[in-house]
Length: 229
Image (cartoon, rainbow, N blue to C red; front, side):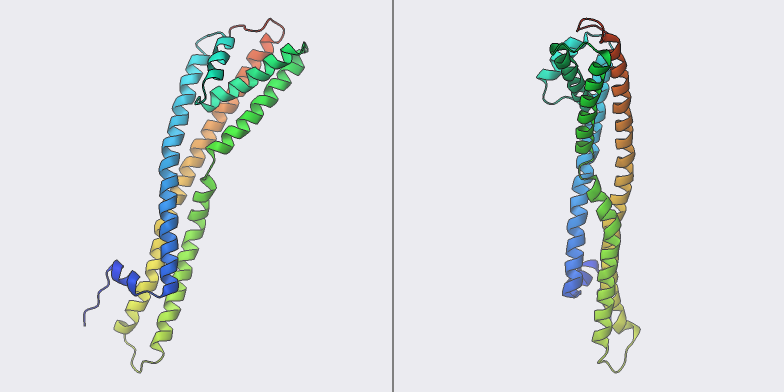
């Protein structure tokens, strides 16, 4: 007798526990794809914004004018916000009559480092979720498979004659859970590795900017505020 081995039939005929496992994996897969697309567009937007600000910064514009423009914008790039935080602290210390170049530079660097950490926390948001889906989903799928096979063999215990035709449907239903687990895990792992590499590049770019801007502030520490670079 021909058996229906379509995915839909295997899912609907699986035991309740296996169906719950499949449903959880599908939800995790849907959530991970949402994170993947959000991260893909978000990181691209951050890279473009950083490049625009970096070109503007190195165009030789007065840093006070750049700071005034950055202070007005609420949707600037991470690099622009780091620049604004360092410049804000530098000017604040000058207003307090701090004249020591080392103190001015240390204050600005601490402010930029704190801003850098906030920016990286925002950039790395939801990255751990992809890592969790990528590492846990195969095991959850395997649990569903083991449970389904166990359930299938328990159901065969009362049969006097067991053939491949009677065993196959139960095993096939159980193996669908492993397939769904891999379907959820593989894109999450690939995306996590890609995004982790992209985020490392962004972090290096921002850290390089902090060092370069610190050198500019060090040169300006002994001169009146508002010099060009």
